[in-house]
Image: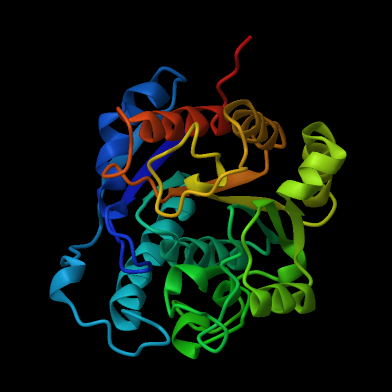
Length: 302
């Protein structure tokens, strides 16, 4: 497979800095070499945009901080993502904070629309990212990116790159949720997304959840974009993330989820976000991100 690695060192979406160094940390953890051992061809590996440090930029409006900067960056990312798919490449996007999903999902959606394909999103995250500027307690856009991709929120975000809804909420499936704002929860339920929380995993068992997730996509969409926030993993295994929360997925569960998604043969693109080397311990989180990508792209134990 031809893989286009796109580095997006953007951390304008949240309060805690450091995720802008995530792509470099993942690169230094050996991503290119790891994927080449799986006989993949790395077509390009670079950052398509020049991003100024957040400290030198104005946040602008308080209910959607750094809106113009994030929109500008994600417009470029959307174009790069769509271009990769049009050339039969797999876009593998390295964040950065989760606001970059606005661009990656917009690009994948545009490519699917041109080919009359139904798009599904696997959103692996501790958080819903389904706030709008009206419900967000912080005004941080990394908490609005999936809502905007589903058509909710500011027009600058919902119409990014194209003026149609990027993904139908009914084709969105979450895994690993454990921190959702009250108004955000109401919007998620009204929109009709499917959500498997950590409580669901505890009650039903991870094997059952995996079967439900793969069945979900096989019965309703043609292709899948994986959006993986490293904070879904318990900080015991992934300490270097923007918002570490106890009680997350363990190492084996996260790898197994990626293996099962690879087995569907439906995944056409992916992003891995929120690796923060400032908070990491001996590159533990960056190394785990590399292993997760390898499993999603075909690696097996046996």
